[in-house]
Image 1: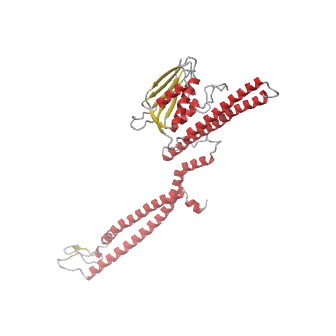
Image 2: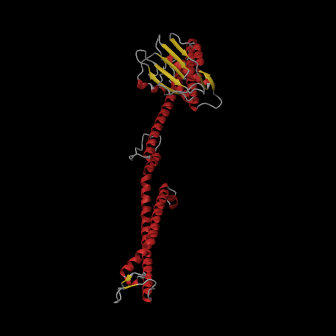
Length: 418
């Protein structure tokens, strides 16, 4: 990396910041020591000099002074008496000596302090560079992992081995994001493969019917049967394409201006009246429930829930449709016993409880995934739970946020889908 590029790295910025702070602290410490030592240095040096050389101390009236360097005995200054010229000369010599020693000490202290500060600057910059590298190491690991990732190795994780902290939390969050991305990519691949398979099957049937059934000179009765078969396959393909388009529209969310008040209780009653289930007992408890949303999409949501409840029911079974004033729509049915582990898969596109048999009225396995997408588009929550034996079946509870003034929205309970 070039020098200009290196200076633009976070490590260089942190090094400059840490180094500047350490140098600032070191310079402040040197200045503080120099000022504090300098304030009392002259008094200390002067006291030492006077103690070592008493003759160079200026006498105070009434004080007995031992000249020390002279064979003369100590004398006592009388009040009002002035020092002799020799004593004044000794005092001046003491002053000059104290000043010289003080200046030399201050100069030596300053030189050593600046030298120590220079060494400290080098060490602080190296320490700041090393410390910045240690701090940013997890970021480098995250960057390298992100650079290696592609659609083929989303299973890789950072798994940062570090003590708890912000960077450890960042790495764990990145790992969790990779898990979600892996799940979404896998779901997208399954969706593409399943959609291709679902669309290829009717095309293959149509081709076989045209090539084999209409080969030669078929009778009018055979042509009628093939015609009916082709129309049925075309209807199935058209329904599949419409379901895929509806799923795509639901996943895009609601368009501005397309929402308004929708009475889900009336919508459910209308769907039941338009296509009443035959040979099934319908139990309805439809309390008033008005939500804000797209009426067409909510109609598909109710219709798919009811269709799913009828299609996967047993002979003489039961369907329960409920709406409540606290924002919940629930549809339950009786039917085959479903394991709890299989319930989440039923909300995925093209996922069924059993393998597809390609029989009439079987469906493409998109009903509940469309319901989930429409619920998400409306800010509603949906969950599924298998009914207990011996009834079996599923129950779906979709909880919608209520408009202002209709009560607080409670947390979504576990839903059962049927």
